[in-house]
Image (cartoon, rainbow, N blue to C red; front, side, top):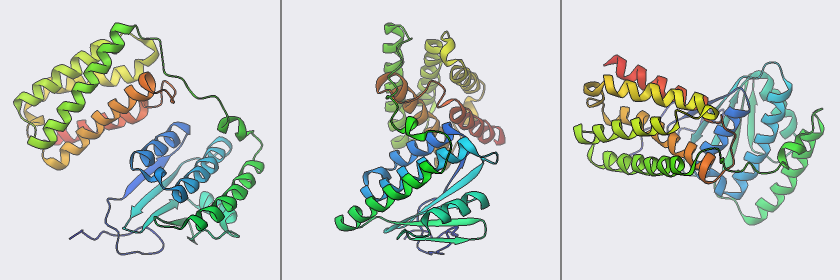
Length: 291
């Protein structure tokens, strides 16, 4: 049976089962990572939810580009039928309430919070009607700001990076694939001396492959720190439990995302993962240091 959790959403839905995701947004990089997370969870595959996410992205972009008090948090909760987006910030909540006030959007607003209730199962007719409504709200958002957000929306796609020499790039992709295979094996069988040594050597080779490129020096520096940290904490890494392993898994998955978005698919700026990978490493350090 799914474990019931304390709820944040204003609907006080007691059937929440997913682990709450608390995402802080301070700048465009955070916003893009927020979108990547939602995309990885397949939320963007639902046409209704995707319409709201596009709307929220545009709203947030205008806000962080124009307001002095930019920091706010989004809390995601989920059950079988609904996804709840709770924004916990007085100024942002007031603005969102003003945009949604005359719409059919399901939401609740109180004090410093606003909770948007997105149903996972809506009809095609509802999607059509909502699309028109959201387009109208989107125009209202865009027209309410001085900077031309249309330029951001319609800008040319970011191409994959080509500054790395081909041999290094091939090595990088191969090492990344090796990390993903290793991650799969470890998830099935747990971490042991053999898998840890392979992880340590793979990260070391990954570090050596990217460390001479100034374009990615912040990301490279974090990988280098992680590689050294692995070297000095073998015993403690072998003691991590299944829950703690999720932190390490997240770190490796972010490396995979970085490789794909910069060198295989394109679509992101060079520094899009710098802060996130650094934060992941700091969490790993705290976890291992406590041991």
